[in-house]
Figure 1 (cartoon, rainbow, N blue to C red):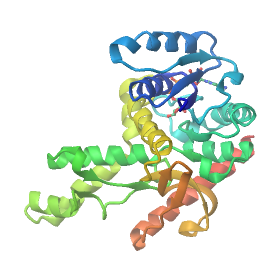
Figure 2: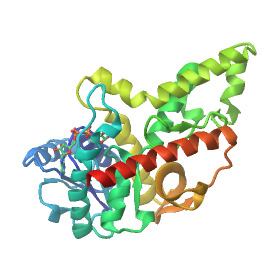
Figure 3: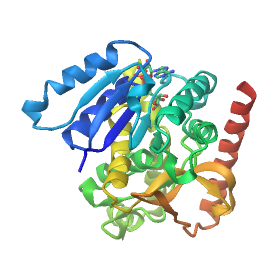
Figure 4: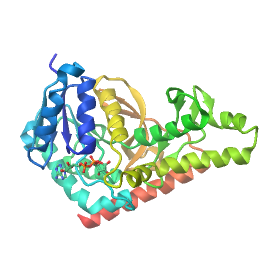
Length: 321
Ligand code: APR
């Protein structure tokens, strides 16, 4: 069986880690495309020369020609500017929308059968634009945000409780911005609600429990910005790359993973025609199912606020284009 082919559009910080993870996990051959000529070839040559040491078989190629992405099974898009300290993801809208328009054209022409995973920010708007411009079915065009936001929430829970993050399950829904919705009620450690574990830790002091939970939720919402501030130049790249790779693996290996993914809703959750983060089943057909969770009144209210923010963002994008 021929190897799968993965195209990376954007060979910057996230693109580089994506390529390395694809190679280390032998997910397939990789083509890295970037408008900066030479750089993607340099990165892919450098990574190729680690193949003996890391022991992977994969052809890695850098390019500035869209023709080279032909036949890709999956395309991951990170093309675009990252945030600078003090910027919100939404501040990237005008610049990255123009880049996404070019990229979508390239994918449509040269990789018409690929699954497309968008990472570029502002995520919810960029994935909307890509789906509109490629015209690909909604099952094949999705955004990576929920896996990362949920991973961050899980990480903070594990640190707070002093347990292995491997046993933590927590999910974040909604848009990939300040209004994202960490679902506190269902967060658990191997089935035990995080609320119960916090109650035990703080001897039943429910004010303290709420205070700690709120702090973890707020840190999750601001986690990207926290990294941006520390880096001083650029935004998070290890964790976004790992999160996208989990999605690629679910698709290429038909894992049927239930993951929060930015998906086009057509009636689900009472939303019509917008991309928002919701739990989906991810397998060889892409988004195979959108899972409608029963949200309580508070969660529903926060989810609606988040959807309204996404709608506003998409309308702002329509104005700049
Ligand atoms: N086509 C292809 N690549 C492009 C284009 C374009 N039209 N315009 C810019 N690029 C490339 C840049 O040359 C750069 O190499 O996109 C790459 C982006 O890399 P970085 O600046 O290192 O940004 P990165 O940290 O990888 O983040 C990329 O993902 O999480 C989001 O907010 C983040 O929007 C940002 C994106």
